[in-house]
Image (cartoon, rainbow, N blue to C red; front, top):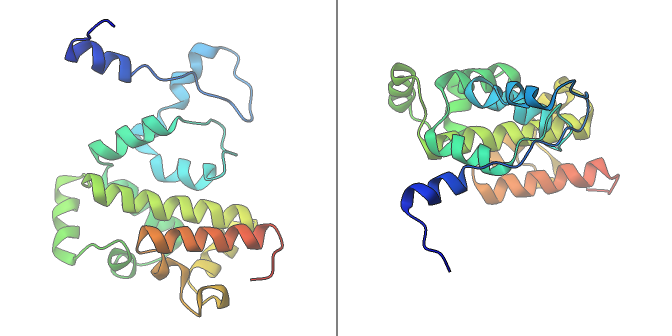
Length: 181
């Protein structure tokens, strides 16, 4: 077996598979990289539109993970806040941000890896809710009101942990498939 240098290993890891287009044909496959622009400035919107793979383009999970490790921009948090139509004072505790941390991140313009992961978790959940409930307005209302299927908990608050987010996602799946919950 051939040994690889660290540089070769890095190159090998970063060779991404070609994107798979779910809708909207491209005239030129080389145009595909233009579709990946969201990694620099639209992760949250892509997650909301593409939680189920129904976005214009499927971006490999490895690319999303790499972006999360680098940290997403603070503007992504603002985008999520705007999409959910919540105040930052209400959203920040759901994401585990103190006011001081929020101000530091706003000044630096970038979130840490773990903070980015929490923002994307909620964005993906919102995307799943949009899909199950057919529009953003219904999804917003559902995510911010107590739900019987969660024991009367508010889904966004329940999703403060990964385990809670998976439970909310399961409930949305049951709703989408017409299972009584």
